Length: 154
Image (cartoon, rainbow, N blue to C red; front, side):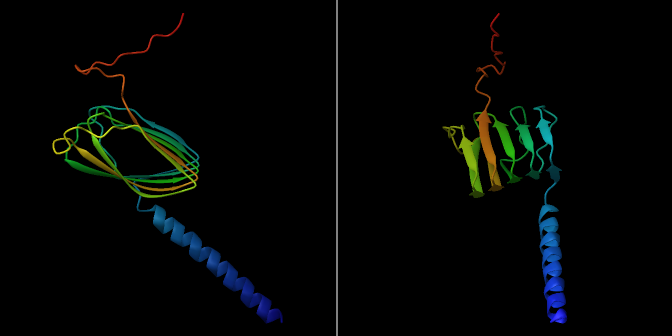
C-alpha cells in the first residue's frame, strides 16, 4: 500500500512538472513577456511593431497612432491572463481580430476604413483569459494631423 501512494505522489509531481514546462514553452514564443507590470509604449515615428506580447497580471497601453507601417499587412499576437490591454490605432487603419477570449471583454472602437484596399491592415491574434482588450483610435486628431488637447476646467 505504501508503494501505491508513492506511485501516486510521483505521478502527480510528474504531471505538475509537465504542465509547468508546457506553459513555459508556450510563453517563449512571445517577444515581450511581462508579469505583474504596467507598460506604456508611447507613440513615436521611430517605433517598430513587436510581433507578440504576453501580459500576465499586467496592464499595457500600446500606442501605434504615429507608426508608419512598413508592410501593408501587419500581425500582432497578444496573450492576456488577468490583464488589461489597450491598443491605440490610427482611424484609417483596417483591423481584423482573431483568436479566443474566455471570460474576457473585447472593445473595438475602430470604424472600418472606407477604402479598404489602400489602408494598412493590422491582424490582432489574441488569446485572452480573464482579461480586457480595448482597441481605441486617436479621435482627437484633425485633418492636418495636429492634435487637439482637451481644455482643463479652471
